[in-house]
Amino acid sequence: MSEQTIADRARGALMGAFIGDALALGPHWYYDLDEMRRRYGEWVDDYTTPRADHYHAGLAAGDASQAGLLLAMTAESLVACNGYDESDFCRRLDEDLFPHLDGSPMSGPGGYTSQSIRECWRKRFEQGLPWGRCGGSADTTEAIERGIALAVRYARDPRQLAISTTRNTVLTQSDESVVAMTVAFCSVLGLLVAGVPFDAEISGRLMTMCKDGRLPFHTVTSGTAMTAPAGAEKARIGSFASPDALLTPSFVARAAADPSIRIEPAWKVSLVYGMPCAIYHQLPAAYYLAARFHDDFESAVLHAVNGGGQNLARAMLTGALAGAQVGLGGIPRRFIDGLADSRARLELCGRLAAQA
Figure 1 (cartoon, helix red, strand yellow):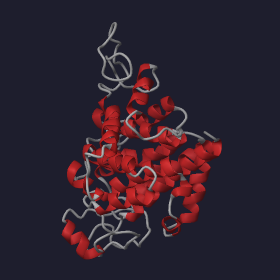
Figure 2 (figure 1 turned 45 degrees about the horizontal axis):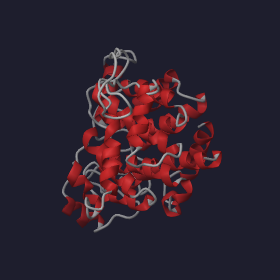
Figure 3 (figure 1 turned 180 degrees about the vertical axis):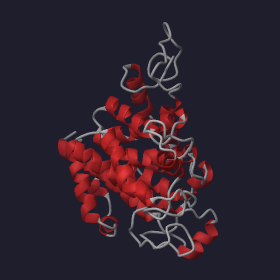
Figure 4 (figure 1 turned 180 degrees about the horizontal axis):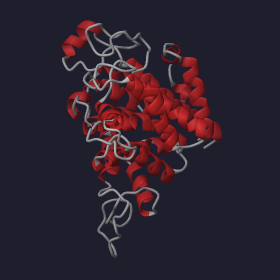
């Protein structure tokens, strides 16, 4: 794998996430698919302007939601500090985001503030709690959305990727299962940036990293998968309780490649795995679309958008996974050109990819 190819995949992953976020801005959170189609047509295939009576009102086609802004903030911190510096990241939240929030959902930069950020803001600003005590119980994907930048930065250092992602996640979300699934997704993305294919073998690679200590997941089996345990059980100190979050990608990839298992049209993945915001609905859908359309960024991200519900998170996560596989060169130019601040986004992607 050449350095240029790794850099291209890194740029593709980050830019893919920015594009997925912006593509879903208009048709975000329509759980009535008939209403979404009436407003945006039978197939959303480009950036759209949010309606005045819906989420993100006042923003324009191609703009970023708050998730996209937080991803950019994370990437900018990584670039400025040449790696994850928690004090710098927290300072940016304190100075650049939190002063613009009031604790309500339908406010703040990007037109909507998610549950985990609202809970963190209340603990930090209203209660005056220090960082490290501001994480809440939200079971959503907000930490993954900004963790995409960490996965790109540490694609060739899985251990540091896991450590940094864990530390960044618990700043706003404290549920161990959510943290584990967040680290698992970012670990998958890191492998894709490094050039590993998204197929049924990817979980075996992740389990190997658990066995040699690079990923902090507790295992009792021998080998790389589900064979019987051998020898004494190691202490779980500092590790997640179960490695199951690492097994989901292979099961989903196997289903996506099985000709006897078809979700048609593919946007109905949102109906199969669920349209809501919770992380356990979002990850299987994103994994499926990225594995099925591993060489077709446009199909992957547009099916994520057209499934409705929490399609912004679904498209952002799918965009990162698909972008990592096709590289920046595999992303249609119209998606890059139509993105707000596209030149600045491309420059940021290039600078972070250079560090990776």
